[in-house]
Image (cartoon, rainbow, N blue to C red; front, top):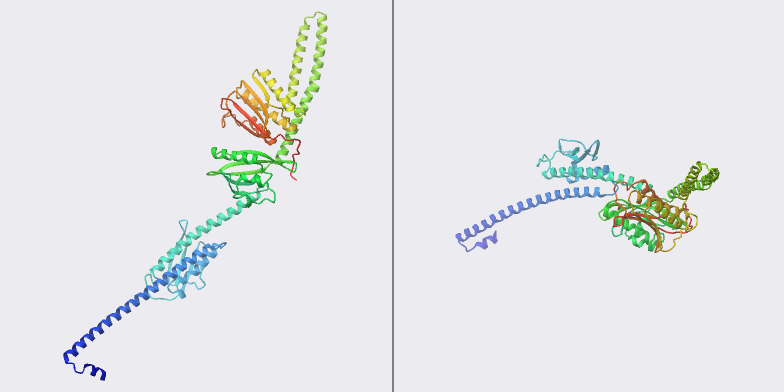
Length: 516
């Protein structure tokens, strides 16, 4: 008090009043500033609280996403976990509880019970209501936007319900896909064939080795490689096989039609037959299947051998038995003719005509016998048989037919020679019957270690897909080619005619049989 008296001592009343007025203004300003400070503080606290609520909501959604991303977690465990993370995201977590109803199943927090303070949202799966999400407070709280709940909590419960529906759809689809993959994998494992995908450049996109390749081969070692690299790493796979396969890949991609070819692999003195099916599976890529048909070919070979043996037996019977009997009848006929002539009977001429007819029958029967058993066991038997076939066609049908070769091609495998002869025989018959050919050229040769046999005619060109192109004759030709590991190609020669080309490896007497 003394300090204040000293401060205003010597000042008149006007100065003191003026000073008091200034101090009053400062006090008013301080009160206003304090009020604004309190308002700012309250607004900040509200913002901080709201921000905390949003953080809890975001944590809830993030935890849901993390839960869904867990591997090998069931849908039931996901929904059970979601029910547990919902209460902490609400404004009063200590008294909050949640429940998820999905179909006949219920997932709820341990403290769940219904009360008068709750909010709910429907769960839709594939556009149909399939359940609900319910959140309750177990005690009364001050009223907000929706009872005791915030408007943001209404948005959150709707978002969670929608997200649950999406999770159910996704998990259902994933489970169905996983089951389908398991079934498909089991099916693939049960298939002994090799299955692969290759693009138009030869890159291996996928590979399942099957039983075609041995145990030392692993599928993963093939993926990512180019097929042209395989001959350098695997001796059983030759460059010729790869080149042939890529030609069929190009045809499949260009035409969209499934291509099939066969090849042989020699291992430990045994030939193994493989069939390759190539089909277009996407843009610039194909799906291929390699199948071991060695056992099938062995059985087919036995069937054909039996058939050929039976033909040979019939041919030999015709030659050795029927021809001999006809020759005996012809001899007796000649004797009868001479007797009738000696007695000047007119019937002598009739007897001579009968003998002539019998001679013609003998000639035809010998021709039938040669047709049933055309290839002799000598290495040049095929060449001799083809030469005789050309002469017979020219003689019997009156069209030009010749057999050409630059140098002798000796076929040591009589079974292979027989199949090749039958292929040529069928091609010649087709040329005359369907192609209306006036000239036929049969050619046998060898280039770069690969033997070839062609039948070219000047008749009508070959058109794929037309009526008659899938007859039994063509099927048998392709089947015979497959039996000897040969490739058969039939196409127009560009000049109106047709050329049949058979490419084969002229092997020696290598054993061909079962795998060890």
